[in-house]
Amino acid sequence: MKKTNQVNQLRTGVVLSYINLGISCIIPFLYTPIMLHMLGQAEYGLYSLAHSVISYLTLLSFGFGSTIIRYISKYRAEGNKEAVNRTFGFFLLLYVLLGIVVFCVGLIVSNNVEPIFHKGLTQSEIDRVRILVIIMSFNTALSFPISVFSSIITSYERYVYRKLVDMISTVVAPIFNLIALYMGFASIGMSVASTIMQFLMLPINAIYCFKVLNIKPQFKRIPCPLIKEMLGFSFYVFLATIVDMLFWSTDKVILGMLTSSTAVAIYNIGCTFNNMVINLSTSISGVLTPKITGMVVTDASKDQLTELFVRVGRLQYFVIALIISGFSVFGQSFIQLWAGSEYSDAYWIAILTMFPLCIPLIENTGLSIIVAQNKHKFRSIVYLVIAVINVFSTYLVVPYLGGIGAVLCSCIAYLVGQGLIMNIYYYKVTGINIPLFWKNIGKMSIVPGSMLAFGIIFDKKIVLDNWLSFLISVVIYSLIYCVVMYNFILNQYEKDVVRKPLQAIIKRFVRK
Image 1 (tube, one colour):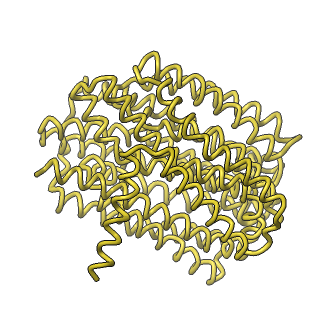
Image 2: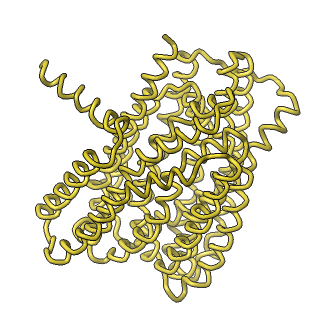
Image 3: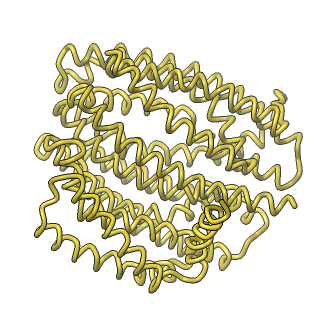
C-alpha cells in the first residue's frame, strides 16, 4: 500500500510539474510584456542586475540542500526516525544562522555598489541598485530556513503538496508584482512583493512538516564523523552551485560593469527562454532524486541505472526538442511581437545557450545518479575550471561584442564541459551506457532536425507580423511534430505516458 502511494505521488508529481510548468510559461507570456512596458528597459536591467548580484549570496547555503534530501531519504529508507529528526534540527539551526550571515553580507555589498558598477551605470542607477540589493538580501535570508522545509518535503516524496504550493506561488508572485507596479513602486516594489511571498511560504511549509509529516527537529549533537561526511558530500555540490553562478549571473554582472543596464535587460530576456527549458527538464528528474538515491542505496545494477537514464532522457528530449526547434523557427517573430524590436538580440542569446544546454538537460538524471553515488567531485571540479575560464574570456570579449560575446563564451564552455567531458565520465566511471543513450537520441533527432530545416524555409517565405498568424503557425508545427513523433519514434512506454493521461481526462468529460 505504501509503495502504491509512493508511485501515485511520483506520477502525480510529474503531472503537476508539467501543469505548473505550463502555468509558469503562460503567466510570463502575459505578464512580462506588461512588466517591461511599465518598468522600461533600463529599470528592468537594473532589477535583473541586482538579482544577479544577490544570487551570489545563495552560495552561502554551501550545497546543503542536496545533502538534506540525500540523508533524509537515506534514513527514511533505513527506518531511522531519530536520525531524520536530528538531521532536520541540525540543518534548520544551521540555515537560520546562515540566513543572518547572508543579510549581513548583503549590507556590505550594498555599500560597495558604486566602485563595482561606476563604469556601466549612472549615479541614479547605482543608488537604485543599492536599495534593491538591501531588500533582496533580506529576501534571500528568509529563503534559507524555508529551503530546509522544502527539502524535507521532497525527501518524504510528497510531490503533490510540493507541486501544488509551487503552482500557487507561480500564480500569486506576478500578481503581487503587478500590484506593486500599478501602485508606482517599480523595481523596488517588485522586490518587496517577493519578500512578502517569502513571509507567507515559511509558516505554510513548516506547519506541513510538523503536523502532516509528523517530524520534529531535534537539536542534538550530531557525531563529528557524520558532520565530516555531510560536509564532504556538500562541498562538491557547493562547487557546482558556484559554477551555475559563474555561468548565469556573472555574465550579467560583467555586462553591468562594462556596458549598460539595457544590455543586461536584453541578455536577461534571452536567458528567460533558457530558464523555461531548464525548468521543463528538471520537472521530471527533480521528483526522481529520492527514487534514485534509494536505488543506489539498495545497490541497483548499472543496467538498471542506464535504463532509467535512457528512459527519462528520451522523455525530456521529446519535449525539449519541440521547444528548441520551434523557438529556432519562430523565436525572432515571437520576440518582436512579445517584447519589441529593441530586444531582437535576445533571440541569438537564447539560441546560443539553448542548443548546448540541451545536452546536460536531457542527461540531468546522470547528475542525480552521481550525487546519490557521492561521485560528483570530478564533475564539480571540471565545471569550476571551465566556468572560471568562461568568466575571464567573457570579461575580455564583452567590450567588443557585448551580450553576444558573453553568450558565445558560455556556449563553447557548455559544449566542452557538460557535453564532451561529462559524457566520458558517465560512461567510464558511473557505468552508464552513453553510446546506447546517444543512439536513442540520434534516432529521435530525425524528426525535429527535419522540421527545423523545413520550418526555417517556411518562416522565410511567410511574414508572421501578428499574433493570429504566429499562433496558427506554432500550433500547426507542434501538431505535426507530436503526431510524427508519436507514430514513428516513441516506444510503447512513452506512448502510454502520453496516451493514458489523455484517456483519463476524456473519460472524466464523458462521464460528466
